Length: 401
Image (cartoon, rainbow, N blue to C red; front, side, top):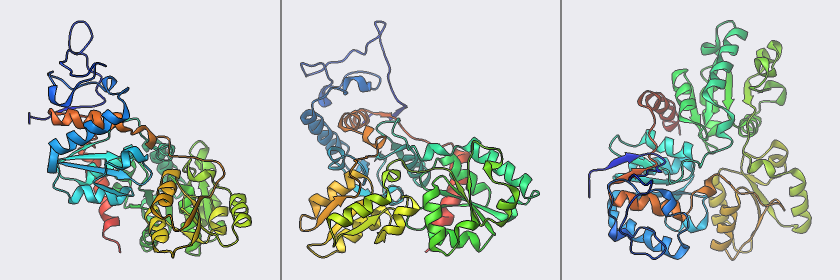
């Protein structure tokens, strides 16, 4: 294999006529895996219209050519036509840890941008993390950016007489940018997942009296309430308002400041959906993700992370009836894998993770075939200083039990 060349979001044009010459073996003008002849990477445009059958064949051939150098990680919410090519599946933290423990040189992360960033932070310098489509982001992660969080911290400093670093622990959900993880690393903070949020908050309260929790208000609120913190001891920080819309007196008595962010997928679930499904199926158990709103969580039988949802269904006896409030691809996959159980999507309205859906077979074929021929397109590489601080916050979490 040639020396690897790194490119991001490649749309290169290599000759004077504005096209890239190739020697392709297909009548529709796509480039063939075994007849690749060009100096630079192939642009995605040559893959966009590939038939699914040919896409699958070329993905399989590229994976075989790359062998043990390759690790394909696929999130539980990913579309099925991509999911079937996974070497490992799981939630965002589990996949990042699998990348870090792997000897593979190339890690293809079929998820969203913050997940690939976390994998890059946790992997070794020689490992290369690739996101097949760089536009696969997370709307929740985008609801808190580093500028907004730094401005919030400055306001907290002023409102708390310069004592923010002594009184407040910043806690960021895994579903956030590397820059926010680095902010937490620099300010004595920590990262959490949906499965360890309570453990992380207990760690935080053992050190300081207040928590700034971002970007998902619902996970923060649901976790804090489960710990016995009443709603009157919580405040919602709205980044578009002066002082986040929180008056100093409310800030002083609040134990947790919840950032005004949410997951667009889990926000669709409503308490009336729970009432409706119970009316249709008297024996149903309602199982929801803690990113759902408080009113839905209060009506559910079981609340758990993505991995916990999978385990709960797997461990249940045949004939069990479940209504699940999480992303539709996972729910449908659980239906297929557990035909002896009655599994339904909690909402009558279907909502999927639209940004993760952008990772498709053409994008996967594109990045894999370019790797075969020595070109890494769409590499996700976190700035070294940001990665160092973010690793501090991640390591604080990883040491917890």
